[in-house]
Image (cartoon, rainbow, N blue to C red; front, side, top):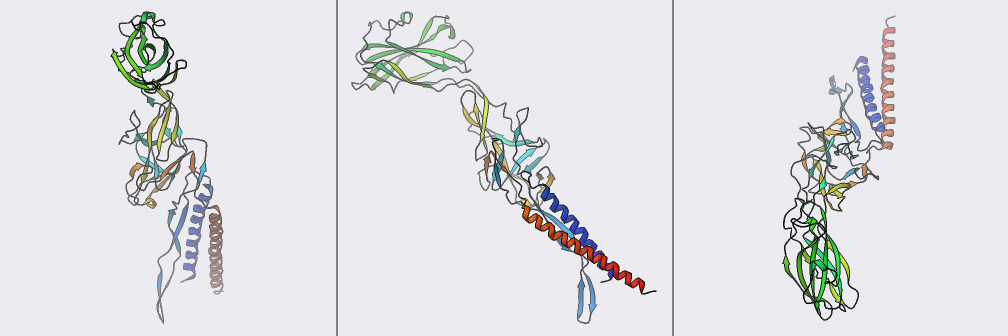
Length: 420
Protein backbone atom coordinates (compact mmCIF):
# COMPACT_ATOMS: atom_id res chain seq x y z
CA UNK A 1 0.00 0.00 0.00
CA UNK A 2 1.32 3.46 -0.88
CA UNK A 3 1.68 6.26 1.63
CA UNK A 4 -1.28 7.99 -0.02
CA UNK A 5 -3.42 4.86 0.40
CA UNK A 6 -2.44 4.76 4.05
CA UNK A 7 -3.58 8.35 4.42
CA UNK A 8 -6.95 7.59 2.85
CA UNK A 9 -7.36 4.49 5.03
CA UNK A 10 -6.77 6.53 8.17
CA UNK A 11 -9.13 9.23 6.90
CA UNK A 12 -11.83 6.57 6.53
CA UNK A 13 -11.15 5.68 10.16
CA UNK A 14 -11.55 9.32 11.20
CA UNK A 15 -14.86 9.51 9.35
CA UNK A 16 -16.13 6.25 10.84
CA UNK A 17 -15.14 7.24 14.38
CA UNK A 18 -16.79 10.65 13.91
CA UNK A 19 -20.06 8.95 12.98
CA UNK A 20 -19.70 6.54 15.89
CA UNK A 21 -19.21 9.46 18.25
CA UNK A 22 -22.44 10.93 16.88
CA UNK A 23 -24.24 7.68 17.71
CA UNK A 24 -22.76 7.63 21.21
CA UNK A 25 -23.56 11.28 21.89
CA UNK A 26 -27.16 10.75 20.77
CA UNK A 27 -27.52 7.83 23.19
CA UNK A 28 -26.05 9.83 26.07
CA UNK A 29 -28.33 12.79 25.25
CA UNK A 30 -31.36 10.46 25.48
CA UNK A 31 -30.39 8.72 28.71
CA UNK A 32 -33.52 10.18 30.37
CA UNK A 33 -35.87 9.91 27.39
CA UNK A 34 -38.88 7.69 28.17
CA UNK A 35 -38.98 4.60 25.98
CA UNK A 36 -35.78 5.46 24.09
CA UNK A 37 -33.84 2.58 22.54
CA UNK A 38 -30.06 2.88 22.31
CA UNK A 39 -28.01 2.32 19.15
CA UNK A 40 -24.82 0.50 18.29
CA UNK A 41 -22.47 1.15 15.36
CA UNK A 42 -21.54 -1.77 13.14
CA UNK A 43 -18.30 -1.35 11.12
CA UNK A 44 -16.98 -3.16 8.04
CA UNK A 45 -13.63 -3.05 6.29
CA UNK A 46 -13.40 -1.61 2.81
CA UNK A 47 -12.59 -3.67 -0.27
CA UNK A 48 -9.06 -5.03 0.00
CA UNK A 49 -6.33 -4.69 -2.59
CA UNK A 50 -4.38 -7.77 -3.73
CA UNK A 51 -0.60 -7.62 -4.18
CA UNK A 52 1.74 -10.26 -5.52
CA UNK A 53 4.42 -11.58 -3.18
CA UNK A 54 6.97 -14.41 -3.53
CA UNK A 55 4.78 -16.51 -1.29
CA UNK A 56 1.64 -15.79 -3.29
CA UNK A 57 -0.88 -12.99 -3.32
CA UNK A 58 -1.70 -10.93 -0.22
CA UNK A 59 -4.40 -8.43 0.54
CA UNK A 60 -4.13 -4.99 2.01
CA UNK A 61 -7.14 -3.25 3.53
CA UNK A 62 -8.28 0.14 2.29
CA UNK A 63 -9.86 1.33 5.55
CA UNK A 64 -13.18 1.11 7.36
CA UNK A 65 -16.72 2.35 6.96
CA UNK A 66 -19.82 2.52 9.12
CA UNK A 67 -21.85 -0.45 7.88
CA UNK A 68 -25.04 0.17 9.87
CA UNK A 69 -26.47 1.52 13.09
CA UNK A 70 -28.33 -1.18 14.99
CA UNK A 71 -31.15 -0.32 17.40
CA UNK A 72 -30.89 -2.17 20.71
CA UNK A 73 -34.45 -3.19 21.60
CA UNK A 74 -33.87 -4.59 25.08
CA UNK A 75 -36.48 -3.53 27.63
CA UNK A 76 -35.62 -0.53 29.78
CA UNK A 77 -36.16 -0.39 33.52
CA UNK A 78 -39.55 0.71 34.90
CA UNK A 79 -40.34 3.82 36.92
CA UNK A 80 -43.51 4.16 38.99
CA UNK A 81 -45.59 7.32 38.64
CA UNK A 82 -48.86 8.63 40.04
CA UNK A 83 -50.42 9.17 36.60
CA UNK A 84 -52.96 6.48 35.74
CA UNK A 85 -52.51 6.98 31.98
CA UNK A 86 -48.74 6.34 32.15
CA UNK A 87 -48.28 2.85 30.72
CA UNK A 88 -45.43 0.43 30.04
CA UNK A 89 -45.39 -2.93 28.30
CA UNK A 90 -43.71 -5.67 30.29
CA UNK A 91 -42.55 -8.04 27.58
CA UNK A 92 -43.17 -8.18 23.85
CA UNK A 93 -45.22 -5.55 22.06
CA UNK A 94 -45.55 -1.93 20.98
CA UNK A 95 -48.20 0.68 21.65
CA UNK A 96 -49.90 1.93 18.49
CA UNK A 97 -50.48 5.65 17.83
CA UNK A 98 -51.84 7.37 14.75
CA UNK A 99 -51.92 10.80 13.15
CA UNK A 100 -55.04 9.85 11.21
CA UNK A 101 -53.17 8.74 8.10
CA UNK A 102 -50.55 6.27 9.32
CA UNK A 103 -49.83 4.07 12.32
CA UNK A 104 -46.67 4.44 14.39
CA UNK A 105 -45.26 2.19 17.07
CA UNK A 106 -43.71 3.17 20.38
CA UNK A 107 -42.65 1.87 23.77
CA UNK A 108 -43.07 5.33 25.31
CA UNK A 109 -46.38 5.18 27.18
CA UNK A 110 -46.56 8.70 28.62
CA UNK A 111 -50.19 9.16 27.60
CA UNK A 112 -52.62 11.94 28.51
CA UNK A 113 -56.24 12.84 27.79
CA UNK A 114 -56.50 15.85 25.47
CA UNK A 115 -59.12 18.61 25.54
CA UNK A 116 -61.40 16.59 23.27
CA UNK A 117 -61.29 13.56 25.54
CA UNK A 118 -58.98 11.42 23.41
CA UNK A 119 -56.06 9.42 24.77
CA UNK A 120 -52.91 10.83 23.11
CA UNK A 121 -49.15 10.49 23.43
CA UNK A 122 -46.71 13.31 24.18
CA UNK A 123 -46.66 14.29 20.48
CA UNK A 124 -50.45 14.56 20.32
CA UNK A 125 -50.89 11.39 18.26
CA UNK A 126 -53.99 9.32 19.00
CA UNK A 127 -53.48 6.14 20.98
CA UNK A 128 -55.18 3.24 19.22
CA UNK A 129 -57.43 0.68 20.84
CA UNK A 130 -60.68 -1.23 20.74
CA UNK A 131 -63.93 -0.09 22.38
CA UNK A 132 -66.29 -2.13 24.53
CA UNK A 133 -70.06 -2.10 24.23
CA UNK A 134 -72.25 -0.40 26.82
CA UNK A 135 -72.13 -3.47 29.07
CA UNK A 136 -68.33 -3.58 29.07
CA UNK A 137 -68.26 -7.23 27.99
CA UNK A 138 -68.03 -7.30 24.17
CA UNK A 139 -64.90 -5.86 22.54
CA UNK A 140 -65.12 -4.30 19.08
CA UNK A 141 -62.93 -5.77 16.34
CA UNK A 142 -62.37 -2.35 14.75
CA UNK A 143 -59.29 -0.45 15.93
CA UNK A 144 -59.52 3.32 16.34
CA UNK A 145 -58.90 6.38 18.50
CA UNK A 146 -59.77 5.97 22.18
CA UNK A 147 -62.33 8.59 23.26
CA UNK A 148 -62.75 8.61 27.03
CA UNK A 149 -64.68 11.64 28.28
CA UNK A 150 -67.47 10.93 25.81
CA UNK A 151 -67.98 7.53 27.43
CA UNK A 152 -71.21 7.25 29.37
CA UNK A 153 -72.95 4.56 31.34
CA UNK A 154 -76.55 4.21 30.09
CA UNK A 155 -79.41 4.04 32.54
CA UNK A 156 -80.54 0.64 33.73
CA UNK A 157 -84.17 0.19 34.81
CA UNK A 158 -84.86 -1.53 38.09
CA UNK A 159 -85.98 -5.12 37.61
CA UNK A 160 -85.40 -6.58 41.07
CA UNK A 161 -85.64 -5.08 44.54
CA UNK A 162 -84.30 -7.21 47.37
CA UNK A 163 -85.79 -6.08 50.67
CA UNK A 164 -84.85 -7.80 53.90
CA UNK A 165 -87.15 -6.65 56.70
CA UNK A 166 -88.04 -7.82 60.16
CA UNK A 167 -91.73 -7.71 60.98
CA UNK A 168 -92.73 -7.53 64.63
CA UNK A 169 -94.53 -10.74 65.58
CA UNK A 170 -96.23 -8.88 68.44
CA UNK A 171 -98.00 -6.51 66.04
CA UNK A 172 -101.77 -6.59 66.25
CA UNK A 173 -103.85 -8.17 63.52
CA UNK A 174 -105.62 -5.36 61.72
CA UNK A 175 -109.14 -5.29 60.27
CA UNK A 176 -109.97 -8.11 57.92
CA UNK A 177 -111.02 -5.55 55.33
CA UNK A 178 -107.33 -5.29 54.51
CA UNK A 179 -105.12 -2.46 53.37
CA UNK A 180 -106.63 0.83 52.20
CA UNK A 181 -104.29 3.19 50.32
CA UNK A 182 -106.47 6.14 51.27
CA UNK A 183 -105.90 5.34 54.94
CA UNK A 184 -102.49 3.68 54.70
CA UNK A 185 -101.24 4.45 58.20
CA UNK A 186 -104.32 3.02 59.89
CA UNK A 187 -104.43 -0.11 57.75
CA UNK A 188 -100.77 -1.09 57.91
CA UNK A 189 -98.40 -2.03 60.73
CA UNK A 190 -95.13 -0.96 59.13
CA UNK A 191 -93.87 0.77 56.00
CA UNK A 192 -90.53 1.46 54.34
CA UNK A 193 -89.49 3.30 51.20
CA UNK A 194 -87.47 1.97 48.28
CA UNK A 195 -85.92 3.71 45.29
CA UNK A 196 -86.38 2.43 41.77
CA UNK A 197 -85.31 3.68 38.33
CA UNK A 198 -87.22 3.70 35.05
CA UNK A 199 -85.75 2.95 31.60
CA UNK A 200 -84.65 6.59 31.20
CA UNK A 201 -82.79 6.60 34.50
CA UNK A 202 -85.30 8.77 36.35
CA UNK A 203 -85.51 8.05 40.06
CA UNK A 204 -88.82 7.21 41.71
CA UNK A 205 -89.78 6.43 45.30
CA UNK A 206 -92.09 3.59 46.19
CA UNK A 207 -93.52 2.87 49.63
CA UNK A 208 -94.02 -0.71 50.76
CA UNK A 209 -96.77 -1.14 53.37
CA UNK A 210 -96.91 -4.31 55.51
CA UNK A 211 -100.17 -5.35 57.16
CA UNK A 212 -100.53 -8.26 59.61
CA UNK A 213 -103.59 -10.27 58.60
CA UNK A 214 -103.18 -13.29 60.94
CA UNK A 215 -100.53 -14.99 63.03
CA UNK A 216 -97.49 -15.54 60.78
CA UNK A 217 -99.38 -13.98 57.86
CA UNK A 218 -98.76 -10.56 56.32
CA UNK A 219 -99.75 -8.70 53.20
CA UNK A 220 -97.61 -6.16 51.42
CA UNK A 221 -98.66 -3.33 49.12
CA UNK A 222 -96.32 -1.27 46.95
CA UNK A 223 -97.52 2.27 46.22
CA UNK A 224 -96.13 5.12 44.10
CA UNK A 225 -97.24 8.74 43.98
CA UNK A 226 -99.79 9.11 41.19
CA UNK A 227 -97.93 12.10 39.79
CA UNK A 228 -95.19 9.71 38.62
CA UNK A 229 -97.61 7.31 36.93
CA UNK A 230 -99.55 7.52 33.70
CA UNK A 231 -103.16 8.38 34.46
CA UNK A 232 -102.36 9.14 38.10
CA UNK A 233 -102.85 12.27 40.19
CA UNK A 234 -100.00 14.00 41.94
CA UNK A 235 -100.31 13.68 45.71
CA UNK A 236 -102.49 10.60 45.49
CA UNK A 237 -100.69 7.29 45.97
CA UNK A 238 -101.48 4.43 43.64
CA UNK A 239 -100.95 0.73 44.45
CA UNK A 240 -98.91 -1.06 41.77
CA UNK A 241 -98.31 -4.43 43.40
CA UNK A 242 -99.73 -6.54 46.21
CA UNK A 243 -98.70 -9.84 47.76
CA UNK A 244 -98.55 -11.99 50.86
CA UNK A 245 -95.78 -13.23 53.15
CA UNK A 246 -96.06 -16.36 55.29
CA UNK A 247 -93.59 -17.12 58.09
CA UNK A 248 -92.57 -20.31 59.85
CA UNK A 249 -92.79 -20.70 63.61
CA UNK A 250 -89.05 -19.98 63.88
CA UNK A 251 -89.51 -16.60 62.19
CA UNK A 252 -88.07 -17.50 58.80
CA UNK A 253 -89.97 -16.81 55.60
CA UNK A 254 -92.06 -19.76 54.48
CA UNK A 255 -93.44 -18.33 51.24
CA UNK A 256 -93.99 -15.18 49.23
CA UNK A 257 -96.86 -14.79 46.80
CA UNK A 258 -97.57 -11.92 44.42
CA UNK A 259 -101.33 -11.53 44.21
CA UNK A 260 -101.51 -8.65 41.71
CA UNK A 261 -99.18 -6.40 39.76
CA UNK A 262 -100.05 -3.67 37.28
CA UNK A 263 -96.45 -2.85 36.44
CA UNK A 264 -95.00 0.64 36.64
CA UNK A 265 -95.97 2.98 33.80
CA UNK A 266 -94.20 6.26 34.42
CA UNK A 267 -95.23 9.54 32.81
CA UNK A 268 -91.87 10.67 31.35
CA UNK A 269 -91.83 8.50 28.22
CA UNK A 270 -90.09 5.56 29.86
CA UNK A 271 -90.96 1.97 29.03
CA UNK A 272 -94.59 1.28 29.93
CA UNK A 273 -95.61 -1.39 32.45
CA UNK A 274 -92.09 -1.78 33.79
CA UNK A 275 -91.91 -5.11 35.60
CA UNK A 276 -90.26 -5.04 39.01
CA UNK A 277 -89.81 -8.14 41.16
CA UNK A 278 -89.72 -7.81 44.94
CA UNK A 279 -87.63 -10.38 46.77
CA UNK A 280 -88.37 -10.71 50.51
CA UNK A 281 -86.58 -14.05 50.93
CA UNK A 282 -84.24 -12.66 53.58
CA UNK A 283 -87.05 -11.27 55.71
CA UNK A 284 -87.95 -12.46 59.22
CA UNK A 285 -90.73 -12.21 61.79
CA UNK A 286 -89.48 -11.93 65.36
CA UNK A 287 -90.54 -10.32 68.59
CA UNK A 288 -88.69 -7.09 67.94
CA UNK A 289 -89.51 -3.79 66.31
CA UNK A 290 -90.29 -3.86 62.63
CA UNK A 291 -87.41 -2.49 60.57
CA UNK A 292 -85.79 -2.70 57.16
CA UNK A 293 -82.39 -4.38 57.58
CA UNK A 294 -81.25 -4.23 53.96
CA UNK A 295 -82.70 -2.88 50.73
CA UNK A 296 -80.92 -3.18 47.38
CA UNK A 297 -82.04 -2.82 43.78
CA UNK A 298 -80.36 -3.32 40.42
CA UNK A 299 -81.31 -0.08 38.66
CA UNK A 300 -79.36 3.13 38.24
CA UNK A 301 -79.40 6.45 36.43
CA UNK A 302 -77.15 7.26 33.48
CA UNK A 303 -73.63 8.29 34.45
CA UNK A 304 -70.59 10.13 33.14
CA UNK A 305 -66.99 8.97 33.38
CA UNK A 306 -65.27 10.18 36.55
CA UNK A 307 -62.10 8.05 36.74
CA UNK A 308 -60.20 5.33 34.89
CA UNK A 309 -57.89 2.45 35.74
CA UNK A 310 -55.83 0.34 33.32
CA UNK A 311 -55.37 -3.33 34.11
CA UNK A 312 -52.60 -5.72 33.07
CA UNK A 313 -54.54 -6.77 29.97
CA UNK A 314 -54.61 -3.16 28.78
CA UNK A 315 -58.30 -2.77 29.54
CA UNK A 316 -59.29 0.80 30.40
CA UNK A 317 -61.78 0.40 33.25
CA UNK A 318 -64.07 3.37 33.76
CA UNK A 319 -65.78 4.44 36.97
CA UNK A 320 -68.98 6.41 36.34
CA UNK A 321 -70.91 8.93 38.38
CA UNK A 322 -73.75 6.42 38.88
CA UNK A 323 -71.40 4.00 40.64
CA UNK A 324 -71.02 1.64 37.69
CA UNK A 325 -67.55 0.29 36.91
CA UNK A 326 -67.00 -1.36 33.53
CA UNK A 327 -64.51 -1.83 30.71
CA UNK A 328 -64.49 1.12 28.30
CA UNK A 329 -61.68 0.28 25.87
CA UNK A 330 -58.57 -1.86 25.45
CA UNK A 331 -55.16 -0.65 24.30
CA UNK A 332 -53.92 -2.08 21.02
CA UNK A 333 -50.55 -3.84 21.22
CA UNK A 334 -48.62 -4.64 18.04
CA UNK A 335 -45.98 -7.27 17.37
CA UNK A 336 -43.63 -7.91 14.43
CA UNK A 337 -41.84 -10.85 12.88
CA UNK A 338 -38.57 -8.92 13.26
CA UNK A 339 -38.58 -5.90 15.55
CA UNK A 340 -35.00 -5.15 14.52
CA UNK A 341 -36.34 -4.20 11.08
CA UNK A 342 -38.38 -1.26 12.40
CA UNK A 343 -37.28 2.20 11.27
CA UNK A 344 -37.07 5.07 13.75
CA UNK A 345 -38.72 8.32 12.64
CA UNK A 346 -37.97 10.35 15.77
CA UNK A 347 -40.07 11.24 18.81
CA UNK A 348 -39.68 7.62 20.01
CA UNK A 349 -41.78 6.48 17.06
CA UNK A 350 -41.10 3.63 14.67
CA UNK A 351 -42.64 2.50 11.40
CA UNK A 352 -42.85 -0.95 9.88
CA UNK A 353 -40.67 -1.93 6.93
CA UNK A 354 -40.36 -4.98 4.67
CA UNK A 355 -37.59 -6.16 7.02
CA UNK A 356 -39.83 -5.95 10.11
CA UNK A 357 -42.90 -7.38 8.44
CA UNK A 358 -46.42 -6.05 8.82
CA UNK A 359 -47.73 -5.29 12.29
CA UNK A 360 -49.91 -7.93 13.94
CA UNK A 361 -52.46 -6.22 16.18
CA UNK A 362 -53.89 -7.61 19.38
CA UNK A 363 -54.35 -6.86 23.07
CA UNK A 364 -51.98 -7.23 25.99
CA UNK A 365 -51.57 -10.52 27.82
CA UNK A 366 -52.75 -12.58 24.84
CA UNK A 367 -50.54 -15.01 22.94
CA UNK A 368 -46.92 -13.91 23.14
CA UNK A 369 -47.76 -10.27 23.92
CA UNK A 370 -46.65 -8.79 27.22
CA UNK A 371 -48.74 -7.24 29.96
CA UNK A 372 -49.45 -3.56 30.59
CA UNK A 373 -48.31 -1.83 33.77
CA UNK A 374 -50.23 1.36 34.55
CA UNK A 375 -48.80 4.25 36.58
CA UNK A 376 -45.49 3.10 35.10
CA UNK A 377 -43.07 4.33 32.44
CA UNK A 378 -40.38 2.39 30.62
CA UNK A 379 -37.15 4.35 30.86
CA UNK A 380 -34.36 4.62 28.30
CA UNK A 381 -32.31 1.44 27.94
CA UNK A 382 -29.07 3.43 27.55
CA UNK A 383 -26.28 2.03 29.74
CA UNK A 384 -24.35 5.18 30.61
CA UNK A 385 -21.27 3.27 31.81
CA UNK A 386 -21.11 1.33 28.56
CA UNK A 387 -21.58 4.47 26.48
CA UNK A 388 -18.81 6.36 28.28
CA UNK A 389 -16.47 3.40 27.83
CA UNK A 390 -17.33 3.27 24.13
CA UNK A 391 -16.74 7.00 23.88
CA UNK A 392 -13.23 6.65 25.32
CA UNK A 393 -12.46 3.78 22.92
CA UNK A 394 -13.75 5.81 19.98
CA UNK A 395 -11.73 8.82 21.04
CA UNK A 396 -8.55 6.74 21.21
CA UNK A 397 -9.24 5.22 17.80
CA UNK A 398 -9.79 8.69 16.38
CA UNK A 399 -6.50 9.89 17.89
CA UNK A 400 -4.69 6.88 16.45
CA UNK A 401 -6.10 7.49 12.96
CA UNK A 402 -5.10 11.13 13.24
CA UNK A 403 -1.60 10.02 14.21
CA UNK A 404 -1.40 7.90 11.06
CA UNK A 405 -2.33 10.96 9.00
CA UNK A 406 0.39 13.09 10.57
CA UNK A 407 2.93 10.27 10.27
CA UNK A 408 2.06 9.74 6.62
CA UNK A 409 2.43 13.45 6.04
CA UNK A 410 5.91 13.35 7.56
CA UNK A 411 6.83 10.40 5.35
CA UNK A 412 5.68 12.28 2.25
CA UNK A 413 7.63 15.30 3.38
CA UNK A 414 10.74 13.10 3.64
CA UNK A 415 10.21 11.87 0.08
CA UNK A 416 9.86 15.43 -1.18
CA UNK A 417 13.04 16.49 0.58
CA UNK A 418 14.99 13.64 -1.08
CA UNK A 419 14.74 15.55 -4.38
CA UNK A 420 16.89 18.38 -3.07
